[in-house]
Image (cartoon, rainbow, N blue to C red):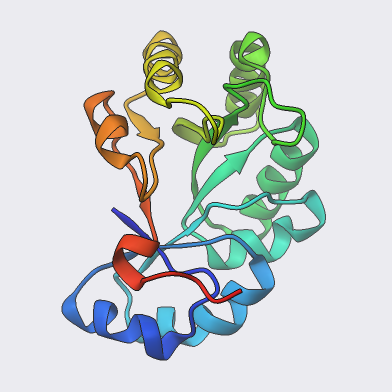
Length: 191
């Protein structure tokens, strides 16, 4: 379970850290940097997940701070992440974000381009452990989770990042291994 801590300050998150939870998700590099840089030095077991859209100009800071990137979605980003991994001698784990609903407003690789993009990532020595999706909000996610499970298995990958507070049970039933839960843990976000 990735506790989605975006927009919550460290005081709100600290009880969960003190309880021993180690996987946290953020969607903005700058916010994560301010919130987690010192905390990760204190608590070595914390694993930080970048779950939001990542632009290639933020790749340098992302590689320094995060352990997992769930939003790998284009070659320019893959190339930048590969370069900075070498520069900082860090090995991150990646999920390729798939635009499973073919929604114009969402990021992600077209499902038909997934295999060629996966090959590009491997050529860049990125440790792609799975795929990730955000199904259309207005539809039943089940059919999208089923398709993602199929696409993930077709690539021979073991990890699958999908499901949030509203649909994590359906995601788990379709072999999700990482789920992103925020409001069910921390409460509603402040606007």
